[in-house]
Image (cartoon, rainbow, N blue to C red):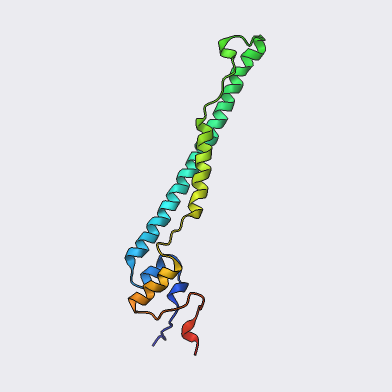
Length: 140
């Protein structure tokens, strides 16, 4: 017969905590939040990449239009007038960086530690445990 080992459910991280205490709805909410964070980061990486490519393309286009003006020596022609680049690539760069950083500040856990302790007490399957005590079942 395999001996049973009691562990503090508060030591479990991620959706496993909610599955162990019998709350698959909260485990699903955890996974959805985690997926949303990943999706925002992927979108941020794409926006950053497009912004970098757009900035490189604008720089290349500006350098190709500058050569004929420099060789002809006339800067009075409309084609040789100084043109500012589009703000879109720089906006995409900023958006991409923001989308990569912002999810770090979002919580994937639907409950706080205090709410988890209250949830354990409500479920009555586990004794009320202090989060700081990692192994209360082995204390005598």
